[in-house]
Image (tube, rainbow, N blue to C red; front, side, top):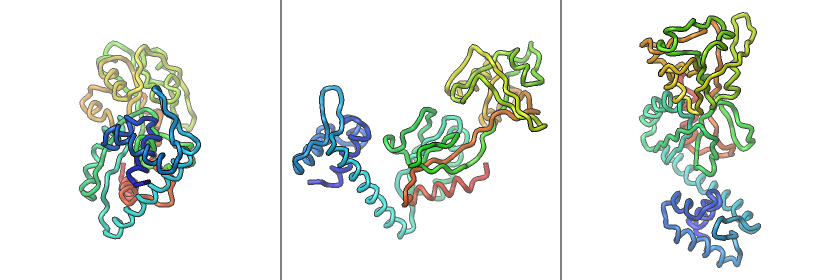
Length: 294
């Protein structure tokens, strides 16, 4: 018999490619996951998964079942949200994924404000710089720099996240300050692997032209905060989000360089599934973010 719990279990197994991980995500035992899947298979005389000791894979019947089951769960969630909407009290759990630096310096400041407006919405902030599978990871809203090409997703611009060139007073103590972007070639630079073309820094000039400079350095990281920490420790000149180093700039620990040139600006977007119906909790968060003055 296909109970809603059984349907949700099959979907979880498919999206996590694992009975064990599905059990953890659902908060039930692996044995119960296996039992619910077996009950559905027995009730309809079908096999949903090919199983062996290493991995599981969907059968044709399983793939067909999953597509309809996913839609069924979406309709069920829409039904519940419609009831909540009538009560005019947004509620539920909202999982938000954000790049680490933006999450630490912006989202941790905004989420308490949102929570005061909607106290019945439970918020979970997931900070990560690696690619996100929103469906598999159960993410309601993703915040990222740059749009996505997935036609199943909507991308709404939120703000611009300017990067500046900076270095520590310690690093600059015995060196000549770069006056033009080209002079960066004479310095050690800390490279942020999270950025595209991290060894080629683009600068906009006041006259409207652009300059691209090839930079070198022995230090690199895919984590913006690690880059900032290495810049602060005297590792070289680097790119950092202005908001993430505001305190260090004010104290003089870090010094902004090449302020006459516009360095890279990241466009920050809200990403969410392209659906006819958007959950009330999600719409509230979208409206909140779009109303903020960054």
